[in-house]
Image (cartoon, rainbow, N blue to C red; front, top):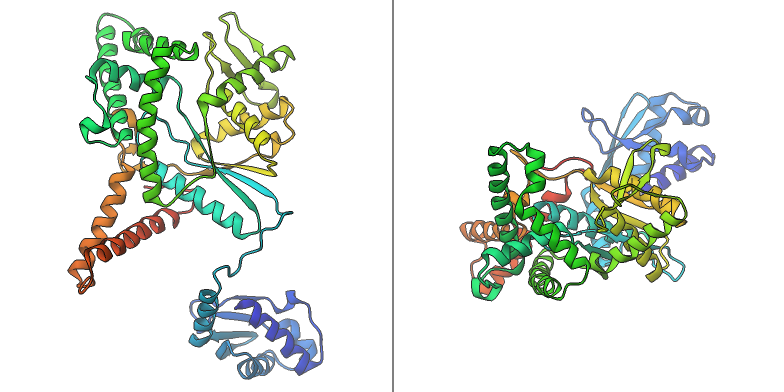
Length: 459
């Protein structure tokens, strides 16, 4: 619309005053609230051409635009400012044009289009998705649609955190208190079932810490010496040593969780082109860390742990391998990055991750560059504000989260109830009512989440 009016202004100047002007002289700005109009043209740059007073020049241009530009329904002059009103029919025509073209405003994707990989979601297999994941998934999915519309090839990817101490906590709790419970026997989604055991572990663990502190230990000592956390660490070591029993339990419980995740993703309307699993990528990361150790890029401490000294870059020292040889998130991210760039000729890598991880990605970029990956410095962290409850951060281990499935169902139920009360569902079948309620409820949720500036915290 603005472009069309700008072109009409340029034509008006040529017709009225015989002068060709550049686009920058025909710049339009939003009309101030106290004046009538939608867009304002400053006419002072045209006074030498018109050889008339500002008001007369604005009047001439305004009259020309009203007669020759169908978008303009009226105008008013305030000194050297021409305030233009856009007619309702003009907006209707634009909307009809947009509606008639499913690819309106999009740039075509060609063989030469850059390939952008966007990582989002990144769930842990010890708990269901929550409100924070909803924001992450919607931001990632929307970013993918925007990048595609701007002429990029896009690969939507997910890295599933399916290994580590947090996974072992849920596994250990299930062994101790699960009595063979399954999604089928409990009637629960698999991710919800495993999340319950993660919460159970934390409950018993905190009780053990409290008992040890009552016997004279400091809080830090008690947290390290509690029997449950020691068992969880032992299980993690066995997992990395490929113990058949531990691996078998891990595979079974993860399959329960994946089935639950798939239901949630489908309801949310998001998906992925490629899913990576940390259980596959962490060995690649360990291999690159060992390679960096041999090259003198990293160093090993007396306890056997491996670190990167980044003090020269104005940062601190970063743990890459624990003393027992197990890897950390940073190591896994290095391995995942390596595999991704082997799998795809990526031109740009974008990580959609909360701003609590700003430092992590700053370090990851430096480490990838040190390890010789030419794309290390160019990775993009799409940082967004975390979602918090009125009483603070959500904590899955304490069960203080807004569950994604519950939230989506609540939105759909509210849409159904409100529509019924307003009589909107008269003469509709049950299936039609349910589908409309789903569309309205999920649309409202997505709008509410995405309307907030991604850089701001959401509450």
